[in-house]
Length: 279
Image (tube, rainbow, N blue to C red; front, side, top):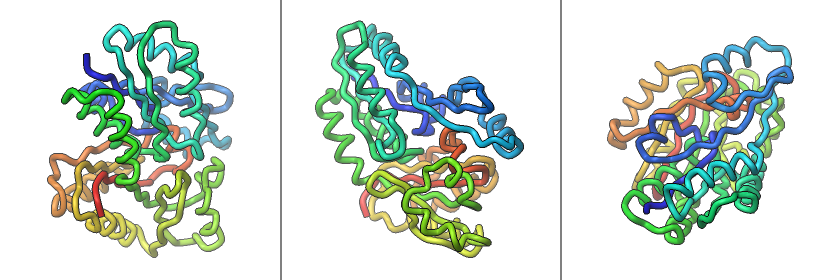
């Protein structure tokens, strides 16, 4: 039986991608005014961004309980003997800890290995996608763990923002705090380095920020997988995907939405690109 791959909703893997590759997505939680919504389950992305822009109280987020992971493991144990779990980085969330603890409370017998990716968004998603494709090809659990750990150093992420306000409110700003004093009229470019949010540049306009994302992709000598995602600007993202067709087959670029848990921190109008490959 092939290995089953599990990831969390911060990976921004769409339901269509998950169904095609046999990936199980465990939702994190978004809390609005005391009400808890499972990321991508209890609230659509459009509904979330509407609330984000109009609610006075900023939403909070929380990790799934270990029991949630355990229930997923037990269900998948009826289909496989081995499970690989790819989670968001520890400096960004405690989800990885819940995934490990879920192994301790699962009821059925099945080998489960957790790889904490030190990534988020589709950078994490591409790691899960690569693992799922290898699993479909017959790669065993131990080799999948090695493959995924090796791929962590090969995956990169860049995100363009209009504002750091939401990241600051959500407490996930990390080293990007250094940009806070000079962000008026500037489009920051952020990514993840050493497992936390890191500033990679600042541009004077939205167009220049998109150029920055393009040059980031063009800097790769080999690209295995690519994904583009947006919060509320699908037309802009579609044009960006067409442009990226000059360096990577357009039909192979995954397109996804920034999920509510990430959206609570990046806000609307964020656009990001993730690449798995070599510089």
